[in-house]
Image (cartoon, rainbow, N blue to C red):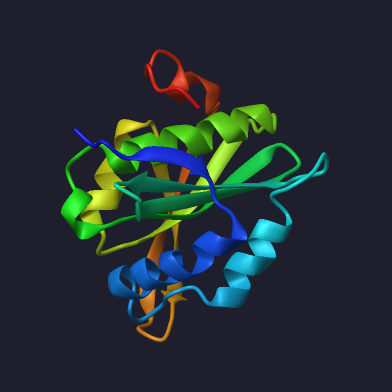
Length: 165
């Protein structure tokens, strides 16, 4: 079980998040600008994004983000440090993102996942996500396909989890 604690991602978290991003996704890591852009939409009354980081002993060991548009949400990113794999941290982050989707009044949540990332696919399936298609060559420059998954009614996936947000 993880001892990490979730909190809202802030601009000063971008550098440590980028280090983790480059370690986990060396071929298709997000840029500093991508994080800055999404964080700009995560504040205020008209926020359309929710980004969180997971901290353990003062170190960022995971993060995730969700974007909302109309009644649809999209998991933008989820990452967990390798030493935290299997601790439940990915589920904790995903639960918080689905709570945000519910707060944004999303009736569905979509995501893309590398076809070779079976660990992540199993996590999403546990939450009720179902495969609905592929995006060929989505992850560049490696030209890796993405599996597109959808969850209808995210509010049902976060009920009774016992996780506080």
